[in-house]
Amino acid sequence: MAYELRQWEQVRVNLDYHVEFEKHWYSAPYILAHEQLWACITPTTVELFHRGARVASHARSHVPYKHTTDKAHMPEAHRQHSAGVDGVLGWAATVGPMTEAFVRRLLESNPVMEMGWRSARGLQRVGERYGAERTEQACARALRFGARSYKPVERILALRRESLPIVGDEPVEAPIIEHDNVRGASYYQ
Image (cartoon, rainbow, N blue to C red; front, side, top):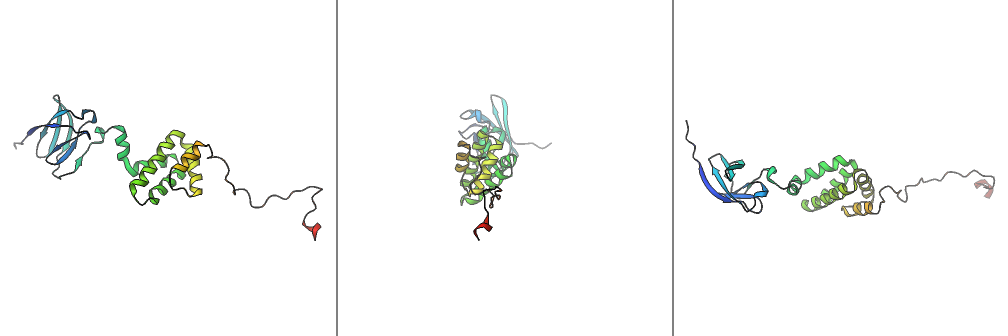
């Protein structure tokens, strides 16, 4: 039977809901921020205890200045943020193809990926407020106009313009009017 070394250390949960051990950060449930915990450290695991109950268990990492985070420990807002680009693209795909195309435009048209992601998250918040059907129509309209920010979509939705016809979409040739008083082109030649 191999003897496993255990080290117990008292740690404090930081505001970012992580504890530090040997220059590596391990997550704890966010509701325990600022609390004192006991860490049981072995060569392969880091376990965190609060008042005798285990609240977290992580594989031990020896990589300095990195985080090991369990998504279950994050507040809901942080979980949505951590979903990143894939999360907002997943949301857009559930709304419709025009919304997905518009999100891709937002992500690709910004030189800094974070800026594009923030704009896409803005669109997601707006879309959740106005509903999928209206958001899809507004994104289709914004794509036609070449918009590169979520603000035009928000404005279209706020003004209820997503389903109005676009000027210039009328048929090129109007139908010929048939009436006794209409002389026609042959009359003038």
